Image 1 (tube, rainbow, N blue to C red):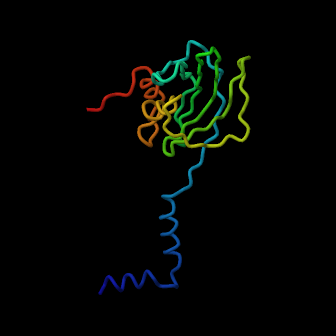
Image 2: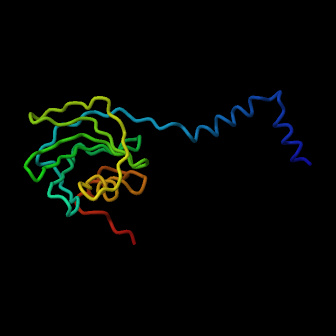
Image 3: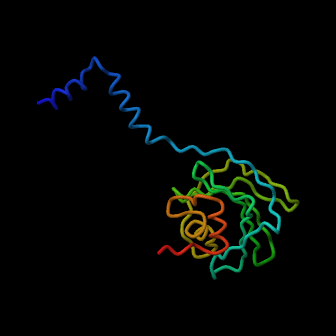
Length: 169
Protein backbone atom coordinates (compact mmCIF):
# COMPACT_ATOMS: atom_id res chain seq x y z
CA UNK A 1 0.00 0.00 0.00
CA UNK A 2 2.86 2.37 0.83
CA UNK A 3 4.32 1.66 -2.62
CA UNK A 4 1.09 2.71 -4.31
CA UNK A 5 0.96 5.89 -2.24
CA UNK A 6 4.57 6.67 -3.23
CA UNK A 7 3.79 6.13 -6.90
CA UNK A 8 0.71 8.28 -6.64
CA UNK A 9 2.77 11.07 -5.06
CA UNK A 10 5.26 10.89 -7.92
CA UNK A 11 2.45 11.06 -10.45
CA UNK A 12 1.04 14.21 -8.83
CA UNK A 13 0.46 16.66 -11.72
CA UNK A 14 1.34 19.53 -9.40
CA UNK A 15 4.92 18.17 -9.35
CA UNK A 16 5.89 18.18 -13.09
CA UNK A 17 9.56 18.96 -12.40
CA UNK A 18 10.26 15.52 -10.96
CA UNK A 19 9.27 13.74 -14.18
CA UNK A 20 10.96 16.25 -16.46
CA UNK A 21 14.26 15.73 -14.67
CA UNK A 22 13.84 11.95 -14.94
CA UNK A 23 13.27 12.29 -18.71
CA UNK A 24 16.40 14.43 -19.05
CA UNK A 25 18.47 11.91 -17.07
CA UNK A 26 17.10 9.04 -19.17
CA UNK A 27 17.75 10.80 -22.49
CA UNK A 28 21.30 11.79 -21.52
CA UNK A 29 22.36 8.19 -22.18
CA UNK A 30 21.37 8.61 -25.83
CA UNK A 31 23.22 11.75 -26.81
CA UNK A 32 23.71 12.00 -30.56
CA UNK A 33 27.20 11.20 -31.82
CA UNK A 34 29.24 14.24 -32.81
CA UNK A 35 32.41 14.10 -34.85
CA UNK A 36 35.34 16.19 -33.64
CA UNK A 37 37.24 18.54 -35.93
CA UNK A 38 40.39 16.93 -37.30
CA UNK A 39 43.57 18.65 -38.39
CA UNK A 40 45.31 17.76 -41.62
CA UNK A 41 48.46 15.71 -40.92
CA UNK A 42 51.83 16.38 -42.54
CA UNK A 43 52.21 14.71 -45.92
CA UNK A 44 53.62 11.17 -45.46
CA UNK A 45 57.34 10.57 -45.68
CA UNK A 46 58.87 7.17 -46.55
CA UNK A 47 60.54 6.72 -43.14
CA UNK A 48 57.14 6.92 -41.38
CA UNK A 49 55.29 4.41 -43.57
CA UNK A 50 54.27 1.12 -41.97
CA UNK A 51 53.34 -1.61 -44.49
CA UNK A 52 50.47 -4.00 -43.92
CA UNK A 53 49.30 -7.09 -45.74
CA UNK A 54 45.88 -6.82 -47.37
CA UNK A 55 45.78 -10.45 -48.50
CA UNK A 56 46.88 -12.42 -51.51
CA UNK A 57 44.15 -11.25 -53.89
CA UNK A 58 45.90 -7.96 -54.67
CA UNK A 59 49.33 -7.00 -55.95
CA UNK A 60 49.01 -3.48 -54.55
CA UNK A 61 51.12 -2.50 -51.54
CA UNK A 62 49.48 -0.73 -48.59
CA UNK A 63 51.00 1.58 -45.96
CA UNK A 64 49.80 3.66 -43.01
CA UNK A 65 51.73 6.80 -42.10
CA UNK A 66 52.57 6.28 -38.41
CA UNK A 67 52.70 10.05 -37.72
CA UNK A 68 49.12 10.56 -38.92
CA UNK A 69 47.53 7.78 -36.89
CA UNK A 70 45.23 8.99 -34.10
CA UNK A 71 42.35 7.71 -32.00
CA UNK A 72 39.84 10.52 -31.47
CA UNK A 73 37.60 11.13 -28.47
CA UNK A 74 34.72 10.72 -30.93
CA UNK A 75 35.67 7.07 -31.54
CA UNK A 76 37.10 7.73 -35.01
CA UNK A 77 40.52 6.37 -35.91
CA UNK A 78 42.20 8.73 -38.39
CA UNK A 79 45.18 7.87 -40.57
CA UNK A 80 46.92 8.51 -43.86
CA UNK A 81 46.74 5.58 -46.27
CA UNK A 82 49.27 5.23 -49.05
CA UNK A 83 48.63 2.65 -51.79
CA UNK A 84 51.24 1.73 -54.37
CA UNK A 85 49.41 0.03 -57.20
CA UNK A 86 50.79 -2.88 -59.17
CA UNK A 87 50.95 -0.52 -62.17
CA UNK A 88 53.23 1.94 -60.36
CA UNK A 89 50.75 4.67 -59.33
CA UNK A 90 50.72 6.02 -55.78
CA UNK A 91 47.46 7.04 -54.12
CA UNK A 92 47.46 8.96 -50.84
CA UNK A 93 44.41 9.75 -48.73
CA UNK A 94 43.71 11.05 -45.24
CA UNK A 95 40.78 9.02 -43.88
CA UNK A 96 38.79 8.17 -40.81
CA UNK A 97 37.26 4.87 -39.75
CA UNK A 98 34.31 4.72 -37.39
CA UNK A 99 34.39 1.24 -35.86
CA UNK A 100 30.98 1.46 -34.18
CA UNK A 101 29.17 1.73 -37.52
CA UNK A 102 31.77 0.21 -39.87
CA UNK A 103 31.99 3.45 -41.81
CA UNK A 104 34.76 5.25 -43.65
CA UNK A 105 35.28 8.89 -44.53
CA UNK A 106 37.79 10.56 -46.83
CA UNK A 107 39.00 13.94 -45.53
CA UNK A 108 41.68 14.76 -48.11
CA UNK A 109 43.57 13.37 -51.08
CA UNK A 110 47.29 13.70 -51.65
CA UNK A 111 48.77 15.40 -54.68
CA UNK A 112 51.96 14.44 -56.48
CA UNK A 113 53.60 17.68 -55.27
CA UNK A 114 53.23 16.57 -51.62
CA UNK A 115 50.25 18.74 -50.75
CA UNK A 116 46.68 17.94 -49.71
CA UNK A 117 43.38 18.82 -51.32
CA UNK A 118 40.35 18.57 -49.06
CA UNK A 119 37.52 16.34 -50.21
CA UNK A 120 34.41 18.31 -51.11
CA UNK A 121 31.45 17.45 -48.92
CA UNK A 122 33.03 14.47 -47.13
CA UNK A 123 30.47 11.87 -46.06
CA UNK A 124 30.55 8.74 -43.94
CA UNK A 125 29.91 5.60 -45.99
CA UNK A 126 29.54 2.02 -44.85
CA UNK A 127 31.99 -0.49 -46.27
CA UNK A 128 31.32 -4.18 -46.67
CA UNK A 129 33.53 -7.24 -46.85
CA UNK A 130 35.17 -7.50 -50.26
CA UNK A 131 37.42 -10.10 -51.80
CA UNK A 132 39.34 -7.59 -53.95
CA UNK A 133 41.11 -4.61 -52.36
CA UNK A 134 40.10 -5.78 -48.95
CA UNK A 135 42.51 -3.47 -47.13
CA UNK A 136 39.65 -1.74 -45.32
CA UNK A 137 38.47 -5.07 -43.96
CA UNK A 138 42.00 -5.81 -42.74
CA UNK A 139 42.25 -2.40 -41.06
CA UNK A 140 38.79 -2.82 -39.51
CA UNK A 141 39.10 -6.40 -38.29
CA UNK A 142 42.76 -6.66 -37.42
CA UNK A 143 44.29 -3.23 -36.81
CA UNK A 144 42.07 -0.26 -35.97
CA UNK A 145 38.96 -1.83 -34.44
CA UNK A 146 38.17 -4.43 -31.80
CA UNK A 147 34.70 -5.40 -32.90
CA UNK A 148 32.74 -2.16 -32.88
CA UNK A 149 35.22 -0.44 -30.56
CA UNK A 150 38.32 1.44 -31.74
CA UNK A 151 41.72 0.51 -30.40
CA UNK A 152 42.52 2.44 -27.26
CA UNK A 153 45.80 4.02 -28.33
CA UNK A 154 47.85 4.87 -31.36
CA UNK A 155 50.59 2.59 -30.00
CA UNK A 156 48.16 -0.35 -29.97
CA UNK A 157 47.21 0.28 -33.61
CA UNK A 158 50.89 0.52 -34.62
CA UNK A 159 51.66 -2.69 -32.75
CA UNK A 160 48.84 -4.43 -34.64
CA UNK A 161 50.06 -3.00 -37.96
CA UNK A 162 53.62 -4.18 -37.40
CA UNK A 163 53.05 -7.52 -35.70
CA UNK A 164 49.41 -8.48 -36.30
CA UNK A 165 46.56 -8.87 -33.81
CA UNK A 166 47.58 -10.35 -30.48
CA UNK A 167 46.29 -13.82 -29.75
CA UNK A 168 43.96 -13.69 -26.75
CA UNK A 169 44.22 -16.76 -24.54
